[in-house]
Length: 132
Image (tube, rainbow, N blue to C red; front, side, top):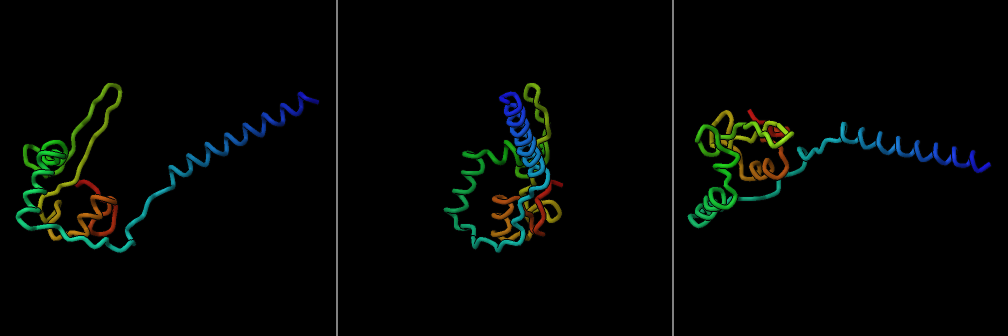
């Protein structure tokens, strides 16, 4: 009798594990965050002299945006990609162009659109922001 109870309980536990793993895999494959239809968060960039100096200091010295990630071929904030090799892990790290370039940059974007792209990864056309 105990043998059959053990078999049934083992089967139920195994079935539960399979269901949990299956639901996690399904969720990872089908779950996509969509913020595109949300209204913009009202924001206006501080374009005063003090705000510009502060922003430049943060971008160039504190976060190293111009050198570490958003540069290509020595041109700051031009975006691009770089191959990363850390031990057994390899990949391509790609970042967007933050210059005012008409085709690939932020030309014509509002402050709210730029903020949404940075915070949520949504471009001006309400699509996931892709690197060109």
